[in-house]
Amino acid sequence: MRHMRLAKREITDKARICEIVETCQVLRIGVVDDEGMFIVPVNYGYTWDEDAALPRFYIHSAREGRKADAFRSQGDAGMPVALELDQDRGTIAGSYSCAYSRSYASIMAAGRVREVADEDERQHALKLIMAHAAPEAPTSFTPEGVARVAIFRIDVDHLTAKERQMKV
Image (cartoon, rainbow, N blue to C red; front, side, top):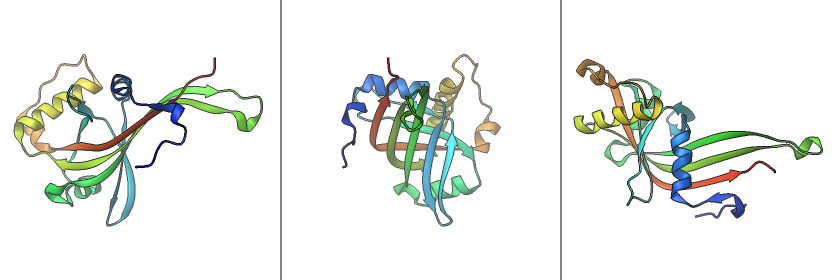
């Protein structure tokens, strides 16, 4: 595994990484299918058990389409994917044009995505997605509504996080 080039920006504290996962709202998933590479932004729910080294993400999707087809293409083995989450914290002003930069926190990860077939896990995933996207919203799902969506789970194999803080 490659080491982060600027180790001073690396975040290794699980609590700080959890904060980034919690405050981001868009998970970008990179995948390769028969048509080539693509990136899809999705909203998500997640679990990160206290004793787990890495999080598990859940997303929902239409049952048909390129994303669903790609995610299902490897069956139970799961489709390898790359993940990205980020917080834009603003412009860092410089004394000349090329000295300007951005303040940010970001997570890069890799894992495997698999479709969730178990009905209890599907319901749990939808609740997690709603709790993350709209924590105050009431949640109830009709059987017809649940049947219309595909639910996918991403088991993370590797994760790095880093940040560039604003200059003080």
